[in-house]
Image 1 (cartoon, helix red, strand yellow):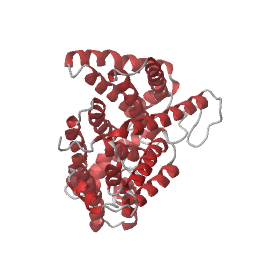
Image 2 (cartoon, helix red, strand yellow; image 1 turned 45 degrees about the vertical axis):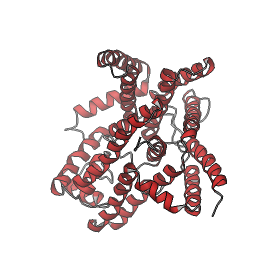
Image 3 (cartoon, rainbow, N blue to C red; image 1 turned 180 degrees about the horizontal axis):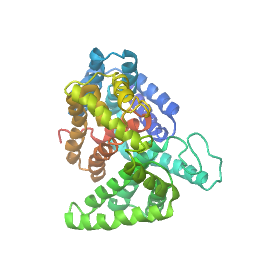
Image 4 (cartoon, one colour; image 1 turned 90 degrees about the horizontal axis):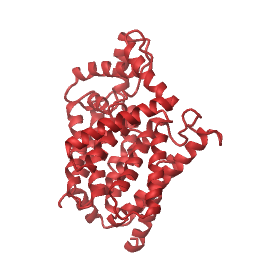
Length: 399
């Protein structure tokens, strides 16, 4: 077996590197994940690892959530698509327990700094593309400068980064003058970056995050918090609407698409309404156990081709709750909610304000954006969710 001291040092280097690579590159992050999992399987001490998993209700909830996808193959007809979905969900059965067993509380700040460094780099490149100082590449365009991932994933991850930076500014009394200036600078520029990119779900998530941060700053004093939210949120929204072409156009488009849904269903908003309506028809017929892991595309197509043949079929309703309800019914929804529930329940046990606040904020933010897309199926957002969860809730369940 591998030497425990040496392997732990290797783990920490790999984890810090993973925190940096996960918002930048799929292949780079996956290579590190494979190495981490491979070393974990070779490093022995299996009884201790097994007991760690058994002691964590959150990890058990995660494993049950994954296993529901496996069991759901038993009543699915499209076995191939079911296997595809399981492949996308494997972080919940393997990576989360692995990371949970090797993260160190004393290195949490290093994981977070590494993640923030990556987002800062991404933000700088985003501005360089926006100002047309470099040629757009990969996912980026001048009007929507998100190079390393689509705006659907970028803005939610950027929101998490803004929260972490803003939290340090507001609550870390030991920040020196230089750090305070740097954090303030990046908090401002990241916020501006939020509104020159096109991710509406991430922008909604940003305003929710800001509201949570205000409540945390005023230590849950409702009157002060609500007054601040009613002033600050509209002020930022109006400023962004007046100054950002892409934000204004996306807001206007969403309003028009909503108002004209009955006459024009072939819009991004119209598609989501249609997905929800047809998915509900499937859910009503299979309310308890759903249609199985792989049958959403097939069942959706049956309804769509009869009721709205002009609208394209889909393999994803762009709503995590809807997808889980279709696949597994109420049983699946309870399983998903159990993960979010244990995250919120465990967080107050931490003595660190940062860990406590982020631990509560993370599931709330994900619970919001999962209304607009299946964010626990996407590589970038799922990895961020699992990685942060691995250290935010470790060792606090019994505190």
